[in-house]
Image (cartoon, rainbow, N blue to C red):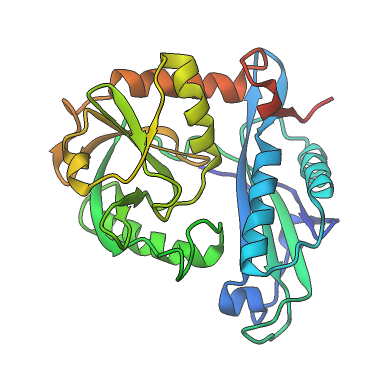
Length: 306
């Protein structure tokens, strides 16, 4: 699914992939003291251009995650944006990418409350589709999404993904492709690493940002594209578990997931068990937005090659 880049950016220095190292006793390794962003870049054959999608929005979310996690950012957004583009160019990449930017506490054998020094890495990774499938069969997990006053899902942090990992591993062990997590109130939260959208009676809906979810950049993109592409506004509210079973359509959305249909939930077919019409239209609208330089919202696409 993914290849390795030749070069990475480690705290402002270009290094070979093989030379990028963090000590095994660093605070980041011992206590998961890191926040990160994962972004996509899409190659456009028509434009002969590589576009990083919503890079500045991802960097704004990184700043918020770092603020909540009390990890001081070692570089401002302007520098991180510039270095992201530079490391892509240094690798000579003209293909679809998954770009990971990790900020971590790099103290050698530091304590639980260590806060510095802070390092970062920018890794542009050639990639294809995360979900190479026509649709997913998912289960509602017995694992609960962590609460905002415990380990807030609003923070995009490595520590949060232990919760997601448990849910995904359970789902796969039980014969499903993926999982949906509920929050501590019993309402629907999200997938292990992606937002959930439903359609019931032609009304699209998604859990609110107070449902213990990550405030997704792809989620925000689709909230804008839904009225523009299909003339419908997405309802943002608490969603009950039983609404999953009466949905006409469902899909995951995220930087990795993009727009991926869900065909069944807990062995119950979603709608007629095939990709729904609104899901298909939104998938098309999304891929046009990320790859077509003439699509609306040019501010979302940052060209690499200038």
